[in-house]
Amino acid sequence: MNELLRVEDLTVSLAGENGPRRILDQVSFDVRPHEVLGLVGESGSGKTMTSLATMGLLPHGARARGHIWFEGRDLLTLSERDMRLVRGSQIAMIFQSPRSALNPLMRAGDQVARAVRLHRGLRGKAAYDAAVELLRHVGIPDAPARARAYPHQLSGGMAQRVLVAIMLACRPKLLIADEPTTGLDVTIQAQLFALIKEVQEETGAALLLITHDLGVVAEVCQRVAVMYAGQVMEIAPVEELFARPRHPYTERLMASILRVDRPAALDSSAALAPLPVLLDTPGCHFANRCPYVKPVCWQHRPAPYRDSEAHTVICHQYPAGESP
Image (cartoon, rainbow, N blue to C red; front, side):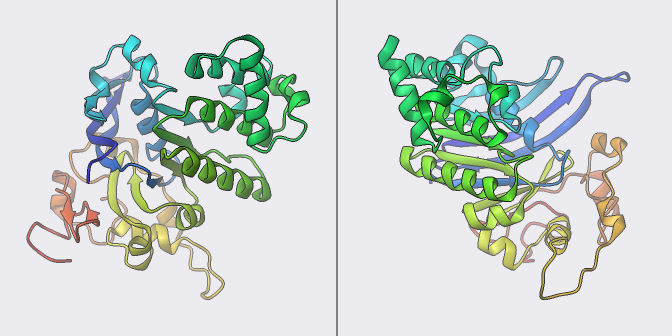
């Protein structure tokens, strides 16, 4: 199957006092046309940095190596001018903090109308009327009045809906949603996830959903890639990953889910973040927490092992040619 997006051996480094420090290490995964792929992991695992690299929005001083193929073009080789043509019209992103993503000096309707002008070719009143209709389409009540509001006058849920309206105006082929419901109550979260899924199906776009909420992943995604400390550990269909996780980190991640049918068995040592020095080691970044660690785990990054056509695990437990 042809991929819409293929991230291949993506490594990102940030400048530090003692030289560059790797924050992403040989990250590889793909997103297929029209599918929803979940990118999950603890806070600090590199999920957001992966999305920023894809959008060409890395912070100052960051350096990226590897490949990010989008419809056959390597985004890492494009100039900033060419990337501007990709952002919005082909790849759009919904950020964690909607108020910081919106212009605080522009009214909500004007910001949506700007996207309409850029991507639909409408002008003047026609563009603004289309923007109001988009705000109504994403479930904002009294859309004409909300269109005249500034971002600080909107609730977090409303501001996020404005971003979805902007994305809908762009009609991208790939939508990246980075923790889109952070800080919202559970009722609004459910509404927003339903809206994003509805828009994704309406436009036919693929969706890369970045989250740490495994419940959302189980409900929304078809496949999931699990990240830890800047590395991808496992990629599998959602049902298969929940039924039989293969990587030791994924096993712990699944065991951390509180369930009513079993007693809580929280292991405080499992919640320890990776030591910063581990991010520059050549091996698996989970080695200091893994119950099955071997000397080779510290020395070499394991090669991807295909458990099945759709299930890949990156772990020295499963050497090539041996079934897990």
